[in-house]
Length: 66
Image (cartoon, rainbow, N blue to C red; front, side, top):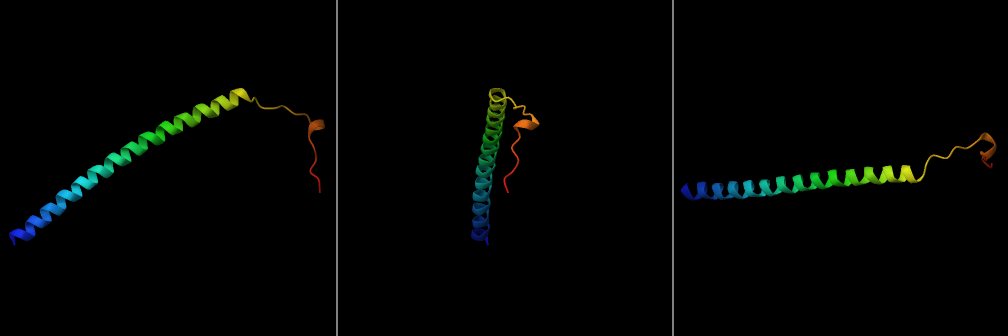
C-alpha cells in the first residue's frame, strides 16, 4: 500500500512540474504574440503613411473586360 501511495505521489509531482512548464511556455508565447501584434500595427501604420490613398476620378476607372 505504501509503495502504491509513493508512486502516486511521484506521478503527481511530475504532473505538477509539467503543468508549471506548460504555463511558462503559454506565458512566453502570449508575450511573443503581443510583441508581434505591436510590430504588425507599426508596419501597418508605416505602410499607410508611405502610401496615401489614391484618389481617382470616374474617367480613370477602367471598366471590366468581358
